[in-house]
Image 1: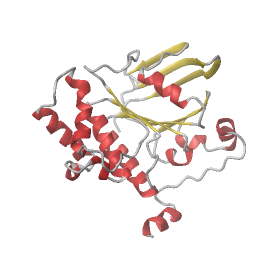
Image 2 (image 1 turned 180 degrees about the horizontal axis):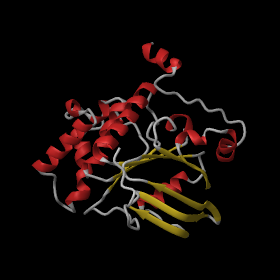
Image 3 (image 1 turned 90 degrees about the vertical axis):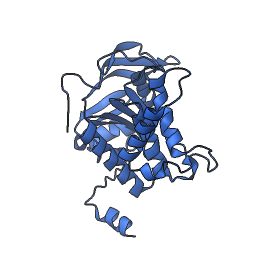
Length: 264
């Protein structure tokens, strides 16, 4: 795994953010290295969306410092972006009238500027990114006819088509079955290893994300844990993050239950 320790992909220092008079984020500090997969987990309403918006430059914190790829983030413009963003998956209607390739070409517009149409080079890059995610043979298929997992892969190709150095994912496994999730996370790890891409994933599902990240932060308005994934799986940290009574099931490739489900 390639990791540039001199310049983190994301660095937050003492972030405070208020909404309707209440502190949604309180003194949040974390670091995501380049070439790593970083998970941010926590309950709904715990500040994950606000934190993601701050990293994207869509809002500014009330206090603290934010650096994304060494710079203060700004809302993405149409001329350049080193940050790819994949919002929570919303399955397209079956009659959605664009191909998978058309969807990926949308990811080139950040590089093209206003009123410029994709050319042959953009089409070649879109086909290349479809190949990276194993969807080159689906290029001409209607996007709405693809399965949830296939749509997610095409959406990642769209985010990668702009050649980002950082990929931000919001609840990336929503709507995908267990087998599709495993394939999706293997894809992310492969992209990290091959390209040095940094990935930040935001999720409420700690049981899944701990098995597929290099580092993790547990967030419920403030950071309750920041470090290796296995370190967050103790009762005290989980109760501070999610509340009492939480049960977590973590599956991996050696899990006999998962193996039985795959065989079935």
